[in-house]
Structures are given as C-alpha cells and as structure tokens.
Length: 198
Image 1 (spheres, rainbow, N blue to C red):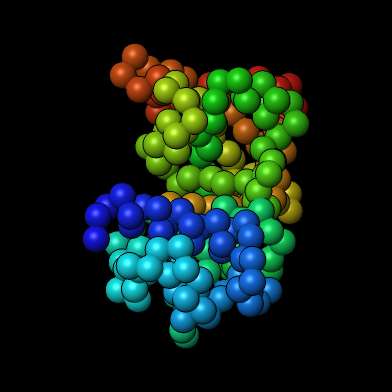
Image 2: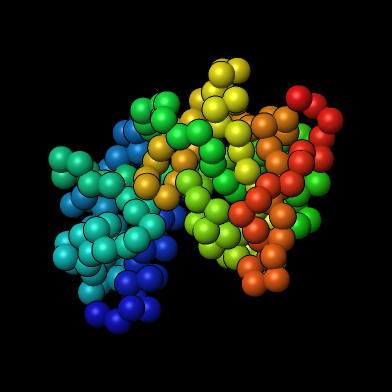
C-alpha cells in the first residue's frame, strides 16, 4: 500500500477520533472498538485492513494513537470533550512550545491556551518544539515553560506521549522566549520574560 494512502487513512482516523466520531460508539475516554473503526475506515478506503491500522499506530514516531484491549483512541489533539484519564506528570521541570512569531505577543500577555483544542500542547525538548512550530511557519518562536514553578502554584501537566505533554492553561508569568540563532532561528538560552510579573 502506498505511503500516500496510509497518510490519508491516518488523517481520516485522526478526524474520527479527535474531532467527530460520527456514528462510532466512543466512550468517555475517547476509545472506540477497533473492529468498528476499521469497518468505518473501509467505507472510504476499501483497501484498509487491520495490518494497516496497526502500522499506523505502532510505526509512527509521533505516537498519535493508542490500542488497549481491542479499542483504539487518539492520545492528543482533541476538539471533542473527553475525560482522557491521563496521569498527572510530576517529574518534568521544563517544557517548550513552538509557535508563530505573530502569536507570541498574545501568549506573553494572556498565557498559553488550547485555542480550538481541549488542551495546550507542549514539547519536552526545544528540538521537538522547533519541529512542531515549523508546521505553521518557517521561523517559529520557541517558548520555555517553567513547569516546576507552575506546578508549585497548582498548574497540572500531563504526559500524553514521549513527545507530547498537555496542559489546560499556562499563565504568562511562567513563560519566556528563547533567543534566536542564524541556523534555526532559535538558541538554547532563554531570554528574560517580556512580562513584568514574577
């Protein structure tokens, strides 16, 4: 099966599990029966089979999906209201967010919000945040989140995958920009917070 077809099937599954399950029976944690999902996918892509779904889940480095006990769900990116029942992360001390230069000013004023999604997405490294940011712009700005300080003031962070962390809202006082470099537009050293808040 061609990579193009696999990509289209993956995008369709993302749509169903993140945004609109249509006639699929989805539980409150976002799971649907794998067999029902496959039947749904086959109405649009008749060549799809169980092997394809497994490869989409297990071979993607982005780890968008999870299979548990014959059920499948998306791990992040939802716009529908679910109780994902994710365990709060109490280990990570710093996270990062890649965004457009245009969005930075609002974020530094009002904080990082989910926008159209249910969660704000964060990355464990600057490199991953840069990769994410480049999906929207050639010159992303990388923001550093002081998770340790935010957590001490009641902000909760959740680990969805090795590359994606989630939070409902990060107030601006816990965010600062990283300086730019010629090579990538970013450096490893953070700039001082633009906001005067502690």
